[in-house]
Image (tube, rainbow, N blue to C red; front, side, top):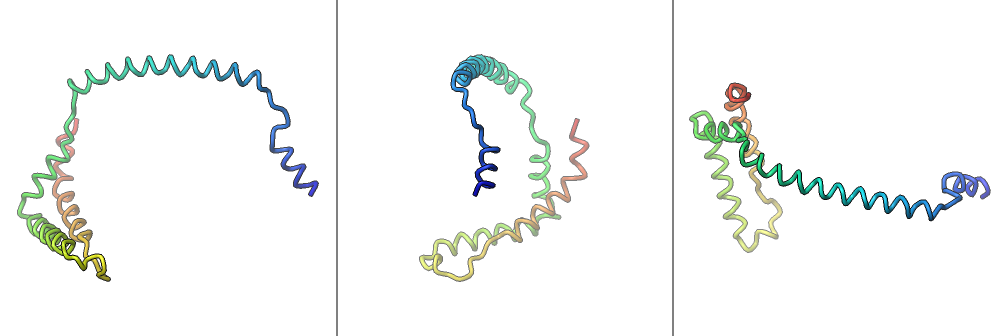
Length: 128
């Protein structure tokens, strides 16, 4: 037991300095107040920057274009059909008791793979 007690005493602080802690807390509070004022000023500046330089992600636009191409039409149709099947199945009152509940993960990944394959070569020409 003395080995355990020695270990605990070695790891735990044996002296507490309450007076110094109060001074440190006051200093921390002063710093926090100053930081809060600076953050408010920075937030105001950031709002102006967002309005002026709001960048649009070209990948989103490219993905939308690629979903409309003939290459990805099959994947889009399969994903939409699966989504409709799952939605219809969820409306069934016995849906909660079914052992197998279909999801559209596989169809979604096939669609994303097709869209990414189409968009990737075009993306770098749109970047600065």
